[in-house]
Amino acid sequence: WYQRRVRGYLKLRDLAKMKTFLSVKQMSILVQDAIISSLDYCNCLYYGCSKSVVAQLQSIQNRACRLVYGLKKQQSVDEKLMSLHGLKIRERIDFKLCLLTFK
Image 1 (cartoon, helix red, strand yellow):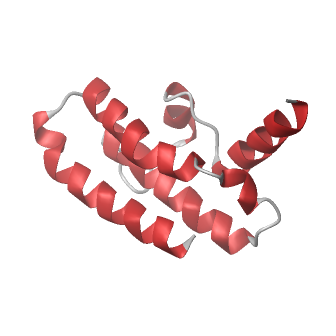
Image 2 (image 1 turned 90 degrees about the horizontal axis):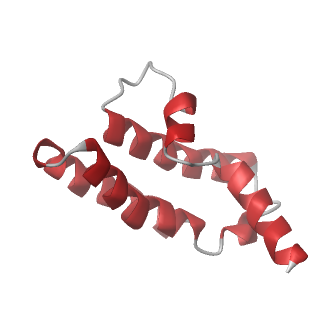
Image 3 (image 1 turned 60 degrees about the vertical axis):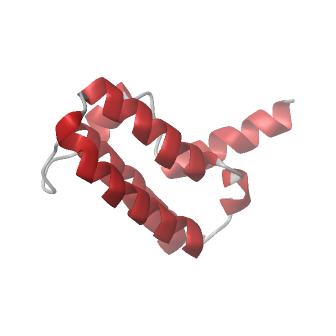
């Protein structure tokens, strides 16, 4: 999880450099592809992890949402996260585990 966290921050930094040239829709697609997909990869393995690990992954997701919509640090990302069709990290882990169990 540590490498995933570091790579996530590095990808966000690179995407932030391109923000001025891209629309919100384009930035949303890039963030979904580069950040969210890497957070979703094998995320059911995080089931039962400590809250600090989940909080760090949630921090990456929150920063990605702030990058797409240009939100300030004090503004809430919950509403905008739903518009990106995203669940919070803990909810994603539970959803993926339920999906794998159902199949």
